[in-house]
Length: 150
Image (cartoon, rainbow, N blue to C red):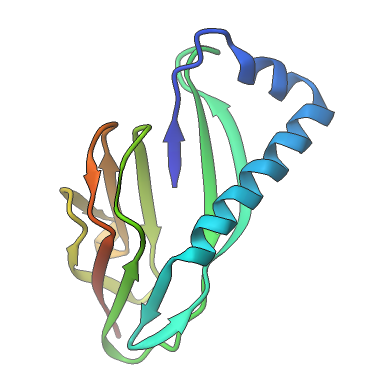
Protein backbone atom coordinates (compact mmCIF):
# COMPACT_ATOMS: atom_id res chain seq x y z
CA UNK A 1 0.00 0.00 0.00
CA UNK A 2 1.57 3.30 -1.08
CA UNK A 3 0.45 6.64 0.35
CA UNK A 4 1.52 9.83 -1.41
CA UNK A 5 1.84 13.17 0.33
CA UNK A 6 2.45 16.82 -0.47
CA UNK A 7 5.04 18.12 1.98
CA UNK A 8 5.78 21.78 1.11
CA UNK A 9 8.05 22.21 4.15
CA UNK A 10 10.05 19.08 3.26
CA UNK A 11 9.64 17.64 6.75
CA UNK A 12 10.10 14.08 5.50
CA UNK A 13 13.42 15.04 3.91
CA UNK A 14 14.72 15.98 7.36
CA UNK A 15 13.28 12.80 8.89
CA UNK A 16 14.81 10.49 6.28
CA UNK A 17 18.23 12.15 6.47
CA UNK A 18 18.40 11.63 10.26
CA UNK A 19 18.64 7.90 11.06
CA UNK A 20 17.23 8.32 14.59
CA UNK A 21 14.23 10.37 13.38
CA UNK A 22 13.72 7.95 10.49
CA UNK A 23 13.63 4.96 12.84
CA UNK A 24 11.18 6.75 15.16
CA UNK A 25 8.90 7.80 12.29
CA UNK A 26 8.82 4.28 10.84
CA UNK A 27 7.92 2.88 14.26
CA UNK A 28 5.02 5.35 14.60
CA UNK A 29 3.81 4.63 11.05
CA UNK A 30 4.17 0.87 11.61
CA UNK A 31 2.16 0.95 14.85
CA UNK A 32 -0.56 3.18 13.37
CA UNK A 33 -1.01 0.98 10.29
CA UNK A 34 -1.00 -2.18 12.38
CA UNK A 35 -3.70 -0.69 14.65
CA UNK A 36 -5.86 0.04 11.58
CA UNK A 37 -5.32 -3.49 10.29
CA UNK A 38 -6.21 -4.96 13.67
CA UNK A 39 -9.55 -3.12 13.53
CA UNK A 40 -10.43 -4.66 10.15
CA UNK A 41 -12.25 -7.93 9.72
CA UNK A 42 -10.31 -9.88 7.07
CA UNK A 43 -11.71 -13.23 5.98
CA UNK A 44 -10.37 -15.76 3.49
CA UNK A 45 -12.73 -18.52 2.44
CA UNK A 46 -14.93 -17.78 5.45
CA UNK A 47 -12.11 -17.95 8.00
CA UNK A 48 -10.70 -14.89 9.80
CA UNK A 49 -7.05 -13.94 9.24
CA UNK A 50 -4.90 -11.16 10.64
CA UNK A 51 -2.77 -8.97 8.33
CA UNK A 52 0.63 -7.87 9.63
CA UNK A 53 2.91 -5.01 8.61
CA UNK A 54 6.30 -6.52 7.74
CA UNK A 55 8.15 -3.46 6.41
CA UNK A 56 7.88 0.24 5.60
CA UNK A 57 9.71 2.35 3.04
CA UNK A 58 9.78 6.14 2.91
CA UNK A 59 10.82 7.64 -0.41
CA UNK A 60 10.23 10.58 -2.71
CA UNK A 61 8.61 10.99 -6.11
CA UNK A 62 9.77 14.02 -8.10
CA UNK A 63 11.39 15.94 -5.23
CA UNK A 64 11.44 16.26 -1.43
CA UNK A 65 8.03 17.95 -1.50
CA UNK A 66 6.43 14.69 -2.70
CA UNK A 67 7.19 11.89 -0.25
CA UNK A 68 5.53 8.50 -0.30
CA UNK A 69 5.23 5.80 2.31
CA UNK A 70 4.99 2.14 1.25
CA UNK A 71 3.58 -0.39 3.67
CA UNK A 72 4.33 -4.05 3.01
CA UNK A 73 1.59 -6.18 4.52
CA UNK A 74 1.19 -9.95 4.54
CA UNK A 75 -1.26 -12.46 5.94
CA UNK A 76 -1.86 -16.17 5.90
CA UNK A 77 -4.96 -18.01 4.83
CA UNK A 78 -6.25 -21.48 4.19
CA UNK A 79 -6.25 -21.51 0.43
CA UNK A 80 -7.74 -24.24 -1.72
CA UNK A 81 -7.43 -25.35 -5.30
CA UNK A 82 -10.02 -23.50 -7.36
CA UNK A 83 -11.69 -20.20 -6.47
CA UNK A 84 -10.78 -18.52 -3.19
CA UNK A 85 -12.49 -15.46 -1.69
CA UNK A 86 -10.85 -12.63 0.26
CA UNK A 87 -13.16 -10.18 2.05
CA UNK A 88 -12.29 -7.17 4.17
CA UNK A 89 -14.69 -5.09 6.26
CA UNK A 90 -13.50 -1.84 7.81
CA UNK A 91 -14.78 1.57 8.80
CA UNK A 92 -16.04 3.67 5.88
CA UNK A 93 -14.23 6.99 5.45
CA UNK A 94 -13.10 9.64 3.00
CA UNK A 95 -9.51 9.23 1.77
CA UNK A 96 -7.37 12.02 3.21
CA UNK A 97 -4.47 11.22 0.85
CA UNK A 98 -4.21 9.48 -2.49
CA UNK A 99 -2.97 5.93 -2.19
CA UNK A 100 -2.30 2.93 -4.36
CA UNK A 101 -2.61 -0.71 -3.36
CA UNK A 102 -0.72 -3.56 -5.01
CA UNK A 103 -1.84 -7.11 -4.32
CA UNK A 104 0.67 -9.81 -5.22
CA UNK A 105 -0.88 -13.27 -5.19
CA UNK A 106 0.86 -16.67 -4.95
CA UNK A 107 2.68 -18.01 -8.02
CA UNK A 108 -0.14 -20.21 -9.30
CA UNK A 109 -2.91 -17.69 -8.60
CA UNK A 110 -5.03 -15.66 -10.99
CA UNK A 111 -7.46 -12.89 -10.00
CA UNK A 112 -10.95 -13.74 -11.22
CA UNK A 113 -12.88 -10.66 -10.07
CA UNK A 114 -12.81 -7.84 -7.54
CA UNK A 115 -15.31 -5.54 -5.87
CA UNK A 116 -13.25 -2.67 -4.47
CA UNK A 117 -15.43 0.38 -5.00
CA UNK A 118 -12.84 1.83 -7.42
CA UNK A 119 -11.50 0.77 -10.83
CA UNK A 120 -8.64 -1.72 -10.74
CA UNK A 121 -6.02 -3.21 -13.03
CA UNK A 122 -4.83 -6.81 -13.24
CA UNK A 123 -1.18 -7.33 -14.23
CA UNK A 124 1.45 -10.05 -14.25
CA UNK A 125 -0.61 -12.78 -15.94
CA UNK A 126 -3.39 -12.25 -13.41
CA UNK A 127 -1.21 -12.43 -10.27
CA UNK A 128 -1.06 -8.71 -9.50
CA UNK A 129 -4.05 -6.51 -8.80
CA UNK A 130 -3.63 -2.77 -8.32
CA UNK A 131 -5.93 0.14 -7.68
CA UNK A 132 -5.62 3.80 -6.80
CA UNK A 133 -7.85 5.74 -4.44
CA UNK A 134 -7.74 9.49 -5.14
CA UNK A 135 -7.84 11.97 -2.26
CA UNK A 136 -11.43 12.77 -1.29
CA UNK A 137 -12.84 9.41 -2.45
CA UNK A 138 -15.58 7.99 -0.23
CA UNK A 139 -14.34 4.54 0.82
CA UNK A 140 -17.29 2.31 1.61
CA UNK A 141 -15.50 -0.09 3.96
CA UNK A 142 -15.78 -3.37 2.07
CA UNK A 143 -13.57 -5.19 -0.41
CA UNK A 144 -13.91 -8.58 -2.05
CA UNK A 145 -11.41 -10.32 -4.32
CA UNK A 146 -11.93 -13.70 -5.93
CA UNK A 147 -8.83 -15.50 -7.13
CA UNK A 148 -8.21 -18.94 -8.52
CA UNK A 149 -5.39 -21.27 -7.51
CA UNK A 150 -4.31 -24.10 -9.81
